Amino acid sequence: QVQLVESGGGLVQAGGSLRLSCGASGRAFSGYDMGWFRQAPGKEREFVAAISRSGGITSYADSVKGRFAISRDNAKNSVYLQLNSLKPEDTAIYYCAARASSVDERRSSAYDYWGQGTQVTVSS
Image (cartoon, rainbow, N blue to C red; front, side):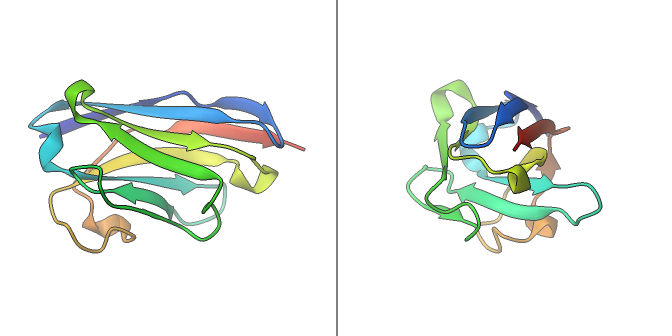
């Protein structure tokens, strides 16, 4: 069992930045690939970014590539998402998730554990 807790969300103006954090407890954090997803009101949950358990491989949704950066610190049992050049369409609840498998990182169903989410609101 892995417990995930996100933090760092908030209200920011367009063009601004935020850094989301996700702390993990429970089973060995370094044994899981990690991902960030988001869900806007009235929309399905969508993939944002993923990182391999070693941190050496990352992937991003096209909509955030070049603006967001995922990273992790296995010594601190944490994964991060740096959000830069934010746009109003980035407004959503952001979730971190952990998966034991190393495939299908863009599918939410591939993930075994989820946090409760943190709200990001970008004003125009």
